[in-house]
Length: 274
Image (cartoon, rainbow, N blue to C red):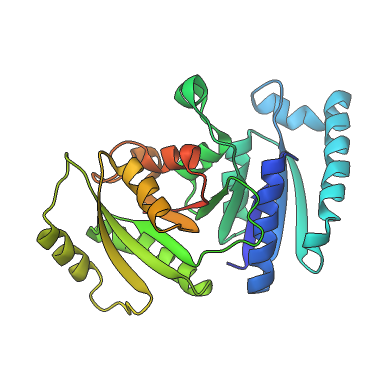
């Protein structure tokens, strides 16, 4: 996790994310790409190509440059290599594109969540990045100073396609010296006996060093509540899960569980693309 992208809108939650990114960068001798997106009041290629010629937009850009300079002078960023970027683009599109363009290992974003009509009809930029990013996304909800991943919950259905994101989660856990709590959420609609669930998890972990891994079976009314309630029961530092992005999640994560967790969890959430 040496190359870290942090989008900022200069809010408190963006600062929380930047503080966590700084801690990760210092731990891994990494660098931070700090990006701010100026969303245009108009749409279309003409607006993008002529944005630099519009005085009003240049005023916004210059103001953003000044704000970024102020952010970069924060004490907690001292000693870290930082590149700043300001672009005219829709926020979530620009974040995903910059992540690929700069070959980053991790995107760290702040989020205050969403609920009610906002969640149903709009969603957040963070939620959209989680859905579309091939790069792991770490979502921060509050001031996590110091940031810890010692108790890392990773929810899975332990299927063949879950192995790739699991390996990424395992690598992340090892980088933090974390203990990984693998949990199978048992729901009424997808019930497995304890014997079957244990056998499935054991087969999934064949050939894996399990010295820092504990497996769990947790029963609840649905997957999201199960993950949240289990994480609370062990006082987890971090929740992780996999996502299919636009195609939805696996049959186990029916619907948009990762996006719901981003909106509803108070703990940090990290997602890994299948």
